[in-house]
Image (tube, rainbow, N blue to C red; front, side, top):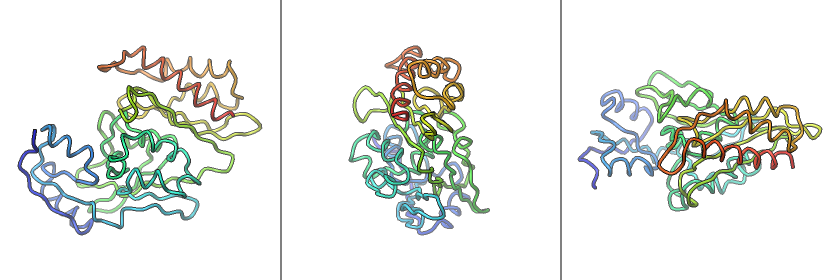
Length: 284
């Protein structure tokens, strides 16, 4: 199929984006990398009257380290994050997750901001941002606000973005030197959306895991922070018994829906397998 007829504007500034969004409202869509939007247009799942191309707005791209945090512009591509030495040094979880995103051709064009704003529950970046307690910077005509990643994702393809707003940056505080991370996922084929995945971060203290965060993808309508499993593991060493306890707690943390390939029971089983793998990495 072909995309429906629509108008196109390449924005020269955020101010121009805000003005166009104010004028056209829900009849306009913002185009960043386009790796999800163009497919939706071609399948007629989306039919806006206007595309606002923000891909040339250099002030909302790039990776910068300052004041103990890493700031990632919304237009930064998946490949740029994957290749970044700053990301590998300060935010290894993102470096671990990036190769799981689709295929190289898509990673070269798709953006972190586009992925977060779309809020696909099987996407990698939303779960990583929740695990890293990221703050998402949102701008609109009335100003800028920051929303914690755990509060940004509201449900299936639903976010805290309001009409007329644009996600501009992701801010992540650099974890301390004792923190470790693990990213694991299972998919039908490499590059497919995950059946289940897990972004995990924890501080190693005397052999035990502290400040543990387990953020699942693909097993809910948004990233799921597995608070029961986190509590079962908090302050404990990784062992067969503690992994079993954490995996058992997932029965209350997760309520996955079946899809075309996997039943709810299968997704829960895979989430438990991934929990064991991630904890083994964190505890090694």
